Picture 1 (cartoon, rainbow, N blue to C red):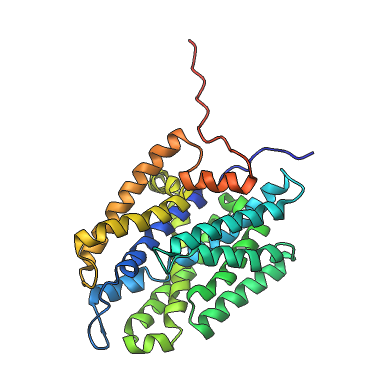
Picture 2: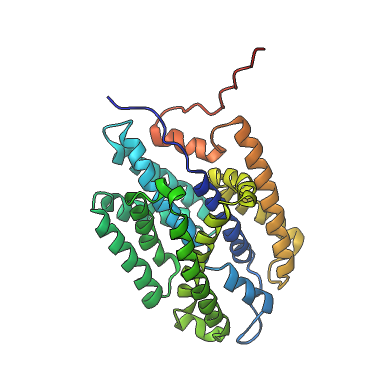
Length: 333
């Protein structure tokens, strides 16, 4: 007989996921609208160049790492409810792939379909391996692809495995006890990320495709952002920030897909296509983030899951899952 108790959500990870969505949004806007990259042959638009160093390749690794970690947590929770947790998880990934296939028609560079494929081909088989083997494979897959292949979607398998390894080593469940470890990682990652970012920034545009600078700088930047945010979330200011980011992270699938719709609706009116107005891009990104933060907060006051998260969950368990929150019992004086 299996238990039905759901595993409690890890608030900090939801906040980090929401943070990663915000960074991914900036990159998705210029990709979807095909904004100008260069102002002269071989010369990047200055603000685009700076935004590339601050955003491009920095948030996608965080999101991918969290996907692998969430995969492991879900698999463990599913094992408490069913004798066939891998079948449930396979159905979950197939559903994600079908959604990604539809989303791909509007955003060709989207990540859901690759996530689903890598999840089925790499993560499901790897989940039965010893944790040390998962960690080694993740490190080799991530660092090796960054150095030798230049990153991109090729980083997904390694990052997924690192997230899976983090769950298997119990890191997600013991975040509260790892303050000093996060501080040490941040202290090492920040100067390395700054140095690598300068290397990327100073590399001529025409040479970027032939060097590993963007991929290496992106991974180090992602590590600095991740550990830095987790440290900030431990402060009073961070607690307020988490209240904004965590609902966005809990509705990550809905927000990721709806952002595409909002960009495609707004871009023609803003004239972003082919332009170099990256200040306007930042304004659009800020507006979308504000709308999604407000809607996510309000929605989750009434419902347990975001709209697409609810559909995904119903398909995963092949049953109609209750969506509305239980009303809080009234107090009697």
